[in-house]
Length: 117
Image (cartoon, rainbow, N blue to C red; front, side, top):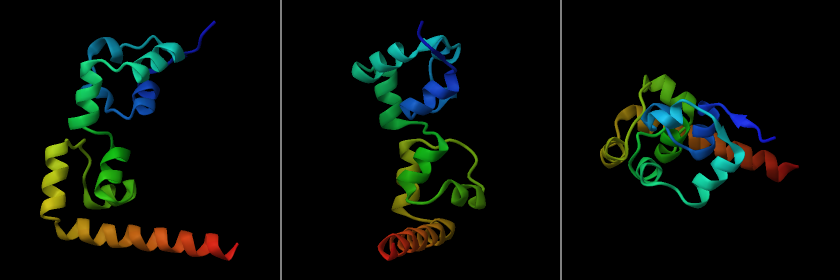
């Protein structure tokens, strides 16, 4: 018997924003085999979501080079699409510059600690 995944879990594993997925996906009933099939041969809706968004918070944060906490501090609560992310990167507001600097410091500190071990 195959395990059925909750829609939010399946969306997270695919790296997509659940509310942007088709209704049949949101209603659930996906098995791990279904998930593997979507990964192996993604339908057009999945290709488009992965390319253009809207993206979930963790993907938005990664594309902007900041943490999810940085998004929260900046008050960015909504999912962003590729165009919105591109606009932020092309003309970064002060909060994005500050959060990227913070994130770079965190990464640098983690690397320093790793080297010390």
